[in-house]
Amino acid sequence: MEADRSSLLDQEVASKVDGLLTRSAMYQVLSAFFLYPIDKNLSMLKSPEIQEHQNALTLCYEGIDDGVELKRYFREVQELGVSTAIETLQSEYQRIVGHTMSKECPLYETQYGAAHVFQQVHELGDIQGFYRAFGLDISEVEKERCDHVSVELEFMHFLLYKQAYAIENHGDEKSQICVDAQKKFLKEHIGKWVPLFSVLFARKAGEGFYSAVSALTKEFLRLEMKLMDVKTEIYKESDLNQEAVAGASDECLSCASSEDFGEE
Image (cartoon, rainbow, N blue to C red; front, side, top):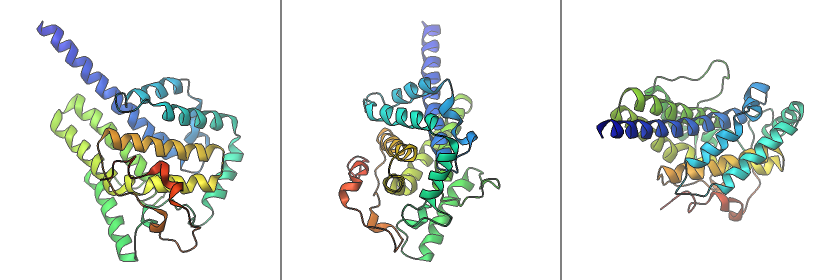
């Protein structure tokens, strides 16, 4: 009986670790999608394991969501990513993002909700504080600011991966440190601005691969925050710190509503 119980516990741990690694990989994939498109950043779309990853990701939210929308957006991203020439994706990315900081859909958190430069500096310092607490620094290769959407998504990938490692090697205490950091980073950063960013990015994209990526990102984050029971205030377009942004009705943000993300 004792051996059977031990075996069951081992299976539970392995299942939990697999789920964490699956969610971690999804953050990493989305992080790559918001960088300039090169083959390396899109390689997951051509992986023979993509269907397996999609199914495993859906299982992570079993009991809280049927995963229908997640599967649909995932499939659209995969189909459009494979069928669209890399040169077309590069052209589309440049059109959406622009050669300077985009005013319609900025890729940087501190362009959202920061009333003045001093508040922006404070926010940047807070984000850097999260990274440094885990011994991380910004890559010299990508050379992006710490509040770039890709960098923040990459950080969540790291935290989930580290949690999985802690469960297997260090126990509950160190695992919980990673959980607490995930919840706090979602509540204070990603969960506040990326839903709005996804809406704006999709609007600028219009259709095609990047519109599908935006929809997938928004749905994935909705499920992540529901899974982790994170409640936060989500920015509306009036919080965007850009004078030249076209107005959007609240209906545009309905799929990233406070209700969906658990705002009190």
